[in-house]
Structure formats: C-alpha cells, structure tokens
Length: 64
Image (cartoon, rainbow, N blue to C red):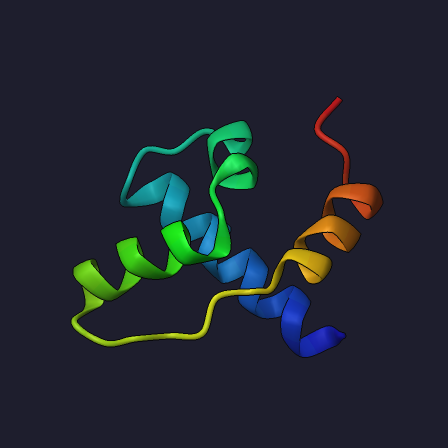
C-alpha cells in the first residue's frame, strides 16, 4: 500500500502543478483519463491506479 500512496501523491502533485487540476478534478478523473494525460505529457505509458485503489484513497482522505 505504501507504494500506491507514494505514486498517488506524486500523480496528484503532477496534476495540480502541471495541469492546474484542483483536488476534486483529480479525484473525479478516471484512472484511464489520468493515465492518458500523464502518458501524453511524459511520453510514456504509466499504469494508473485502479478504481478500487482510488475508492480506498477517497475514503481515507475525503475532500470534505
């Protein structure tokens, strides 16, 4: 789980800093959307988190 948390934090930081996404935009984006954006920006194809992992994070860290 630690690996996922670190990856999610990095991806959220990227989404905020580079794309200008607010947290709610990041959390509403599907893993496929996140992966497509990162792949387009970075020129590679990272594996985005799956829906179950995102749901666990949303439950653990609600945005209000």
